[in-house]
Length: 125
Image (cartoon, rainbow, N blue to C red; front, side):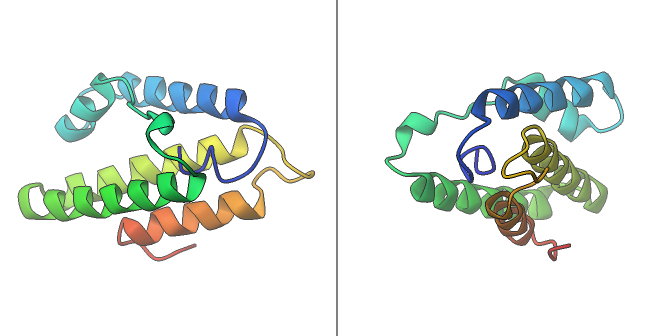
């Protein structure tokens, strides 16, 4: 939802892209027990809990940092990297789902993806 709310427009297409990314990840069942568990549940993104996109982004980034810290203490290095890759792939697919101002990924979406990468402990591209 951080990427969906980063730029105006495209919310419907971007939400569908998020669903498709989860479906694709489900088709890879068995490659990672952790990711199997994550994608088995429907994404819970109740953006109505937040008054502003900034509040949603700040809370979402905090949750990503918390998730990575927890995984680093309990999961294998491969599982942590798999989680990071899944989240970034999801963010990329959502951003590319709707062209904004003639760009496949808007500057606001690219900034959101960079913030997600940083929260995940991965340097920006």
